[in-house]
Amino acid sequence: MLGFGVFFFGFLWIEKQYLLGFLVIGFLGVLAFATGFNELLLNRGLSYRGEIWQEVIRQLTTECNIWVGCVPGEKILGEFYHPHNAYLAMLYRNGILGAAVFLLFIVIFFTMTMRVKSRWMLLSLFGWGCLLTEIDSILTSPEPFWVYFWLPVLMAMIEAGRKDPVSPRID
Image (cartoon, rainbow, N blue to C red; front, side, top):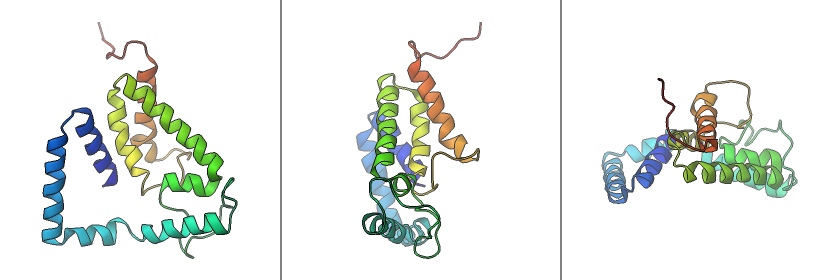
């Protein structure tokens, strides 16, 4: 759901539909609270992620080397094998140095793709949003994650690297 939320905000931002976004978010928020759906989302949607993230930050700052990260293999809270957040996992597993490289990739990606107004960048926002709660690492063996993250990212980078970002024509 977070992936769809990031995509939705990105779409509204690019299309400059700020008022529509504010109204939709407000309506959905009121509806969620009125029906009790917000409790269901928090109970199932985050699935202990707040506690996991707090423990990861605690371990990183007290038990590990913050510059190079923690040794893989230790369970988090005794039962979880990864932080359930790729951004935090990059910091946890690779420290500040690895997180800085990942941040540099993010800055370069969005700078390049926003400059040419890449159509694929908007689609890639779904994958970037899913990284908030889904996967342990962005560097994995082939799996479905590649379809909603790496494929749109690759296509956006290819589109941004072209001088003329128009669609190819078949004659």
